[in-house]
Length: 337
Image (cartoon, rainbow, N blue to C red; front, side, top):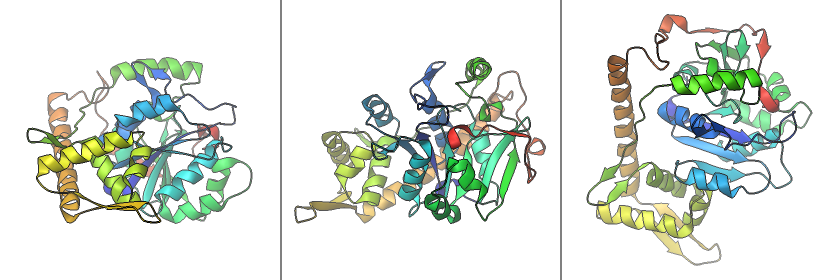
């Protein structure tokens, strides 16, 4: 059973069997589609949200993710299909995370409760199911990554999943958002109604003196520096300018009162950056405090808004949610992903 801290999220924007890729900035109500997904993953406590764009650079998306604390990577320009994006993302994540949740951008309104339910399964592969249909996000354990990456046949991710040695579990949830596709006319109308009804607490932690020392953006930057060994690479993957990244680092160090990043300039490799023990300790305590605040916020929310995440409807109870290994009647695994 994965812990939230061991699980990353991956949103893959690429061409589907329908043809062109879905626009991740397509508005669903008052937010872009991917922002609903990012919100659900982060509210459920997942520490990393990876956005994979298949094909040419998209500066509009880069501008959005800069302020959302999301990591952005691209496939090769010629790799425009969604399955290439899935492979690229798995390769990027496999050394750091034991689990990943994968979704295309056109199923934007699954809830944080669904993400939490998926984290409770012991299965290596799992989909949520609602009204007899399997939906997104897909949960995948690291044991499956190499098998998916090695698959070269037709049928995309769907076929690759069918060939896995591990059985797939289907998790019953009371969340219509897992099956509602923005590109489906009926689904689009339902999504418009659902996003007006969703009510939930958002907890984002900022540590400050007179200056901001740590917030979700600087936390992501430090984590990526630790991962990549480069301030420039970390800033690029956040869609942030190099100068902005240095500004955040210098402000964090000034507020903390000591150095957080060790910089080794020059050399044939162009220099490296690494986190000092003080930075790793700060990250650990920041993550712990944010987790405790999120749990407390959800508990208070449930007390003050007992109608739950959907206005006028009761909160699903544990008895409403169960695991079955029976194949559902239909599937909405869009875009071969």
